[in-house]
Length: 307
Image (cartoon, rainbow, N blue to C red; front, side):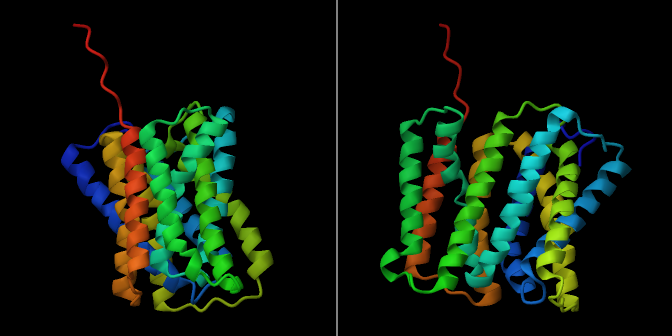
């Protein structure tokens, strides 16, 4: 980590860091799917956020960058904690109980598609032709992935699993919109441990009430999964993403992160033996293409020349 959270990495270091984020978050989809065999979804989310927050508090305290949040930042802390760290994680974990890890990764990363129409409605942003095209192509990919003609609408588990993942993507989109609209006092890294803390304060009692009587099967595999999800997938992944975003062009970062669901699909096929059929492959290509157009539409425009 550089001396200041605002100090950019070198281009080479940033690209390597982006590759690590894609690797960590991609492999974590089959890892989470495996972990849910031993622990309930609420308890898993509480343990992940608790361990991730503890790691961030220790790291920022040791480096002398732990600061108290201002009153102005409290609404953002609450919304990100409630929407992303609590709502998103719980819904993703529930979805993983019923849906393959690879498919779950693709659906959860449709978030930018939902950011576009909500941003138009809430923030008054204008839609360019590229954004409209990206939205249409991405939603077509979602439709292909769902494959309505072959969808078992009578299976409640299928409906619950896929519905939870789509709702999770929408909650993440709402958190992103608040982050866009917020006027920052402290930076995202400075606020992150407090977001983890609030998330833990919400998740721990929720897990105790809803899953207090559900046993946890402690095995070396579960301990390794929790150790990976807390300090690495949550704490490291969160900070690394911010450092990459501050060191590389926005389009490069956005397009690079599109490799996460692709990595999740491939790692799930390798580690869990999940199949990559034509429907899933075509849906992934369309969604990635739609997200890429949305990201490209958000690229910084060159200032007009005066001569």
